[in-house]
Amino acid sequence: MIYSRITGTGSYLPGPAIDNASLIAARGLDSSDEWIVERTGIRTRHLVGEGVTGSDLAAEACRRALAASGRAADDVDLIIVATSTPDYVFPSTAALLQDKLGIRNGAPAFDLQAVCSGFAYALAVADKFIRSGSHKCALVVGSEVFSRILDWNDRGTCVLFGDGAGAVVLEASETAGILATALHADGRHQGILSVPGHVSGGVAIGDPFLRMDGPAVFKFAVRVLADVADEVLVAAGMKAADIDWLIPHQANVRILQSTAKKLGLPIEKCIVTVERHGNTSAASIPLALDEAVRAGKIVPGQRLLLEGVGGGFTWGAALLVF
Ligand code: UT7
Image (cartoon, rainbow, N blue to C red):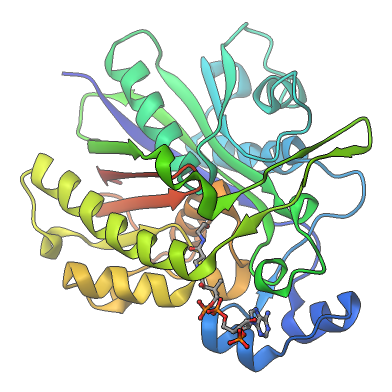
């Protein structure tokens, strides 16, 4: 039986951490550190400088993941980048990343767009490629520059997000790695979180910024994160108590607390990075995973439950042995 298994993790955050007070002052926002911390748990985030793109962040994260796995760039035979903030409409960020990493073996490379569920989706897709036997060594990446699609006059959204990238090397293995995945979408909820326009050649067409009904998203997220966690636990024949670490998409610390509570897990079993990264959309899960691995919290053999929810609406989870 072929499994897919994570053999290396890496991440990258651009620039210095920007705290709430500095962001509020720099952008002239009618907000406060107290409000942001109390409602979201967010204290700092990282934002890209001019000219830096998602493929730049992804390349750094991938170099670190490859080094951790002991793989060379040309060992990679599949590249999937989860992103909603690609460098261009096309070519894909994944193709640009392939070039930046110097991968010259013709490995397929494509972007996957499922917003904040993007990494859960990309991991599930790569798992299926590897289990089929067609590919052996995948780079699965989440990379975002949400600062480029924020309306800096909308205090209800602009304080929530950050930029960053995370990556894993996913390899074919005879020992169990990914045990179960589940993916879902329901397009009826498209209106509560969307970017209803775009920028083309520097010209805004429609409304090119992120728009969100925060309370509606909050309620939806808590419900589907609990459901999809149960779904992968049942599929793997496990209980929540069998999980060593829960790594949810990092949007709001109150969502993380509710999700852990619904699963009956103490918050200590939940990896929390949202206070330092903000919401980095598709990058948040691999960023949190990599930080916890490098901090020595997550060690090989532990059971992890990764789950995400985002615009579309989309949601998904993966249960795995690290
Ligand atoms: O990654 C995709 C998933 N995204 C999420 O999961 C986000 C989910 N939603 C949330 O995290 C929360 O709904 C928010 C953090 C976005 C908002 O928190 P909330 O507790 O739901 O607040 P609210 O939107 O109901 O707003 C409460 C008040 C409003 O003022 P009034 O109408 O009561 O006078 C807002 O205008 O807070 C006001 N407000 C702010 N005040 C200071 C909104 N943003 C700010 C702000 N600073 N930055």
